Image (cartoon, rainbow, N blue to C red; front, side, top):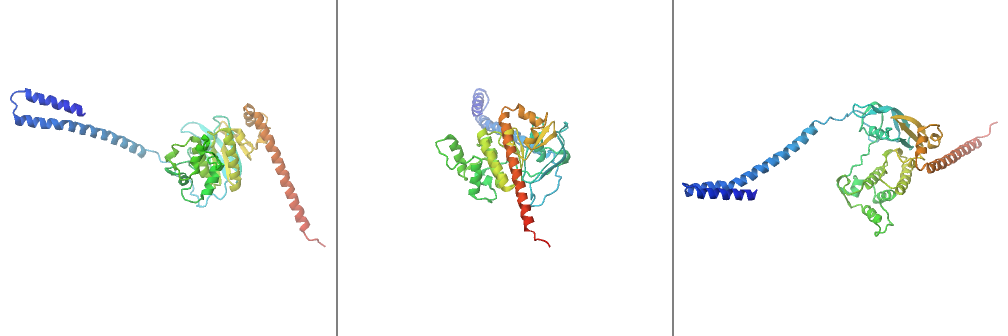
Length: 358
């Protein structure tokens, strides 16, 4: 723009000199306005750009003004709710927009401290159930109760993201990070994996907004750590460790079970890796948006032409899955016999403790 203005001024000055009948006063007047003209054009261009930017902002404001307000209906829970992690779904039907329902009359109940898995083939409606639980999809029919836990990160430190209200000690945070394989106190700095873990060794290290700079797996695990620190009564996982390798996933699954047992947390897990949920108390099998099977793995695998059994048979590691089910069944039977023995001993002690009559 400066070069164009200089060329324009030079041409105007040349015309003033060459044209006859132009005295000094007129020449000075013309040249003074000619010098100001490029600045005026530049100012006009800048104002036009500012108007365009302002109109873009106005468009976004108008877009937000027209956003449909989500349904605010529902019951306001008390401050101490929930006191037990129980989830009950009654005749739930859910769909996307005006499309047919993807969940059709789903009903099930999850008791306190139970570990329940939701499995099924692709498109069976597993993830749609989690969307319905968190009201991303509104129920067309039926009722459901939830406890939300949004994995949102804000600009700050690891400590402030894990514990924004300063409720937990550093030791509790380190134990949780170590259990989720994000921190290793014995790691050597020469190892690449150790360098990644050393980032979480200092709770004062910064975290960018939305977790930028962290891998997807690290964001998942950091969200899990924050969830377990809050000691929730109910946790819903939708492939929470999907981006991790099998070895790390196995360690984290073990930690999740330990924490759930420690704090009496109810787990509802949407799983694609059947090996991670074989030992759950109950497995709910979805097919075409409906609950078709429900029960522990050792019962479902014995159903002829069952959906769960077919998923086991087509799995590449079906031999390992069957072995895990067999081991879980043995453990379940031993636990049942132990409980029966304890009940018998207790009954015997009560009978012996009664005073003799007569």
